[in-house]
Length: 178
Image (spheres, one colour):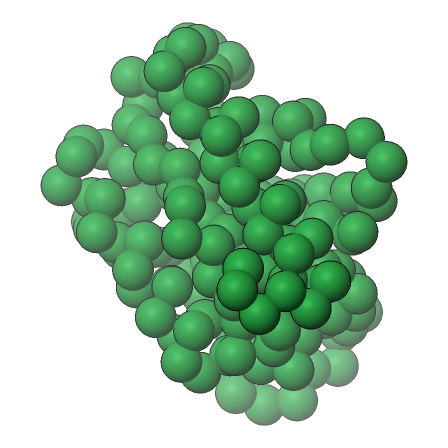
């Protein structure tokens, strides 16, 4: 299995990046795991035109070559930020189709939780992805400095990674009841 974790925050002090790194560190051994961080990788803005950029080509190849993709993002004003949508637009339907896609998000409060649906719906309906029904959502209170310290969130993250990787394995094995 090949797993990809995409940290889509552009902020140098991103809590969603800490959450993504914590998820990446929990991926099971014996699989190929790839980390892409937009803060260091960067992408041009998608304008609907053709991409003549090695970073976009690398993103598309990496998503297309993965079995499972985890997209991590911060929530601002009750929405996923433009950088997150930019990743989805550049990678495109062909790269995400049939992949098991999961989400992890950090918001300002409990009211931001429904924002995750703004990404799950197009993944299901437009991109043909299998969306993991589990996701992790937390707030800034779960972090101290550069560490995820909330034991409840750590436990939920463990369960989430287990559910996502198991679903990915079942889908790839052709289990139509996954």
